[in-house]
Image 1: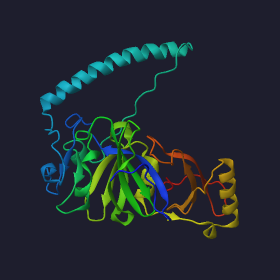
Image 2 (image 1 turned 60 degrees about the horizontal axis):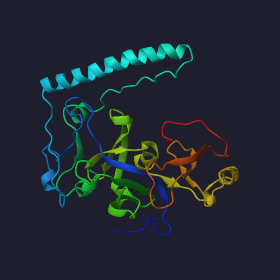
Image 3 (image 1 turned 30 degrees about the horizontal axis):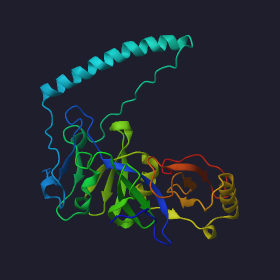
Length: 298
């Protein structure tokens, strides 16, 4: 199904949209790889309906890992020498100091170091219905996939990156089919997320801007109309709308902490834009006052 521009249905609220794809391993044994598994850890890519042939991977042996690590160490050593020189110059104000990378340890070694499944699905489970276009190793060059989260459903859209055709609806499920989502920091750009379905299956996606998408997948959301806001909160929403010159009311939701989040997103209009995320937000308390972030707010 191709459409010129995807829009929510009447009465449906779009909450988040972002570029997504099946994730890619970063540990030496599985770097650049991914697998599609059943609950016995068997490869099921040949049994996924409608999927074309794709690349087949094998975890690297210890000698291969050492060779690869040695090559990377050589590059890091060269970088360290260059960076050290640049940092010395930076002390004199000649150049900007080179930032240092921050690493994260594996959170799930069985699925991040020894193996790297991006699909974990028993027969007839929902994860097995995900579209093959999410796989960077199968889809055409320049093809992009997006996840859209609304108050009713999750939709996967796909489109060629040439701007000549509208997005194609590849897949969707009800929002109630999502059990939760967690960010995975042991990943490229710290931007992987595991999306869990209520039937026990799950997928691991690389998400361009994970906070916006995960906010509405990690926990059930509660959208608030003006009739459910205090007078102070209604005034704060009106001021937020005027301050950002918004043509429509921003999305207002209650977070698990009890705080109320007001936000709008840039690039919300069709067609989806790469990297479109939160354009502005405000977190407020019972009377519309600004409050500090709580762990569950974002």
